[in-house]
Image (cartoon, rainbow, N blue to C red; front, top):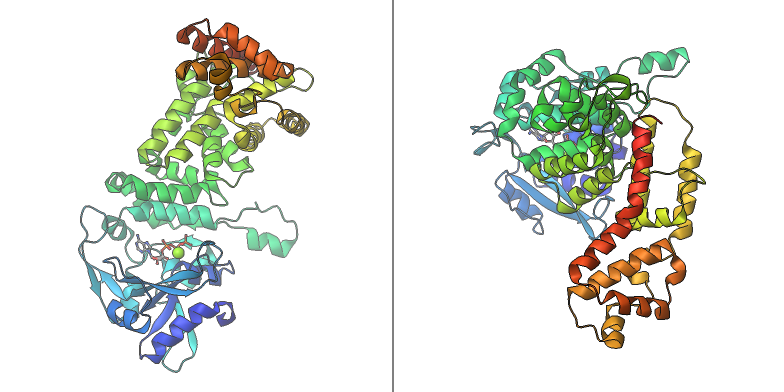
Length: 507
Ligand code: ATP
Ligand code: MG
């Protein structure tokens, strides 16, 4: 296993050893090494105090009160492309002091015992150290039988589960995050006997640990939205995101993470769907082909508005406007969890537009241009990914890839047509200079109307035609112009909407 340890990490450990200290790699990286996954970051634990570590590595950072020094090493990870160096976290052995409000400990107590340091870690599979012992021979130090749990695929707290979750409620989320991250991506479909037994069982949360999570789930209220968000993001980006969300629900945690998503539980749909809204949202996430957070979030939340939009029951129930209701809920949920503005905007945009209508031969180039205008060319790929999840997750195995491939072709085809103001043959300056229209919001409104008309008919995109048209438009007041632009983009949308409605009612 030692051969798998990158040179810069070995060097840090050797330097600490030479100075007379103990040093081990620990936590997630050892877990990943034993699982033969590639670790994504490396943590070192040592009995040297932060001051002593700083003396050995003078170019380090020590900016927190948790006993962790960031040691600069030559770059070896792919995760920080802009820097010449990587940071390896070197943490002094510690036990955790008093906990306040089920959050972080209010103080850190250093200890000289590795075993004590491992005892304060959350799960047995995260409480394994690996490094040189007294005779410089590298050994695995595993007092809580984490390796056994790794083999059995069990997530189990170090020590008494309730006690450990009581200390730090974030661990409730971390358990589910580990579960989602570690689950095998491929279901056990292998036929050969040996492989079958190997894949026969999946990762699970140990029973007492899971019972304690359910019992204490409400403690998640005490955890800051940012910390919940970070764990949720890791679940969404894991190989088994939908199993992760289902586990959040099973343990009661989802009530404090994405309560609105739960509204779809047990909500049946109409004749086009064999799954409830909840199941369908989860399946859309599972089958969404995008690796991006905002796109996966949109897949999970794309139908979140359906329960509130539902009218009628059974075969002919309808869900008008669930796309817009869902976009608002998406914004609300992600804002509450303090997601970055750009992620919120993008996820909501994708949810808002996930119903776009496309049928080969039936949809005009102009309507594809209008779709691009609404969504943005740069977001079309992600919108398709949400749609693919929506389709594959509907459980109706319709072969639709041809339709989407055709749409991709159409997008490519029209993407050089004028679909944004900067592609118009005139700009605001032309209007001011040539038509003497004074600077102000009216210019923008006229440009919007021109764009809407050119989207409909790209042949109008000549300077001469547009200036003539602008001349006429400037007679109207601002309000009228704005309405005109909106109508022109919306106008056809109404016709398109009718088709969408049809699809979601009776196809
Ligand atoms: P990842 O591979 O996603 O980084 P990780 O297990 O390394 O997973 P980190 O957040 O990097 O997770 O934490 C490193 C180690 O620190 C963990 O493996 C665990 O031993 C310990 N740890 C982290 N957070 C907690 C916590 N809230 N309570 C107890 N121990 C924790
Ligand atoms: Mg880690």
